[in-house]
Length: 380
Image (cartoon, rainbow, N blue to C red; front, side):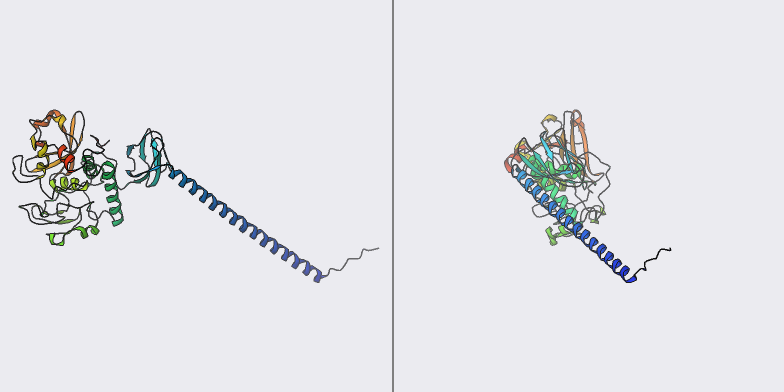
């Protein structure tokens, strides 16, 4: 007998299908809601971890005395101590007691020996200190205003860490421009000086910059005296007319560089020059060392008596010693034939070198300021 086939009820099938769709949609909603709940919980946990970490970091910071800010170039090294640690070694690390700049950024360094913490700023806008007399001449408008402000901060930090109104502070400024700045500072035949320097036209910022910071941004025009514009204003590296040199990039002349270094460290010798020679009777930079005997002939001075931060010159130009070691004297000299360069002079040849006289500066730094500061004979 043949089997009877039950007739399929299409209406029932439609109901079942609808229920199945509803069940699937419900399941999807449940799953999505669950995922959202998990994500919310995950965010809450992460936020709590972040809060806890920040709390732990604040507790950690509170255990250490604030040592201020250290600015260091990428690739540069600075002695800091052995028992130190970095919050992020991708920015700065500790290597055999030296702080090493790794990449651009800011990081906290802890010194457990002194219970001191430092905010360290690492940048490639400047270089580890070294002699390079073949650097590219500073181009016009090389830095944005933000970069110029940052470099001013770096310069100020280096001066303050070395010691404000000290020999070391002057050296920090001199070394920064001569050894760490990425570009060679142009020599500019000055168009004049500020008041207080007799026998020269009145000018501001044209071959000299007797103001705080680096003259790298047009924002610095605000610190200049508009009555002192002869052919400017133009920032360093940008061309303008020099009465003695034609149209050339603005920069510093020899005494402009030395007085700039002194002024950055808090000294105020006046916007004066280097004098015509050792026997010049007018007030000039060599006269700052009068308490140490004034300008002393290189043929009569013991080379070992010369320290970094002393002034050295020959007739018509002046420079500053930025380093001394057992064999050599290293002089930062802003001169027309090679702009700002560092000249290495053997001590054994000092009396026969181009340098004619030295101005020892101990008394000036002691009487007008706070002495030697964190002095180092060399930059490394």
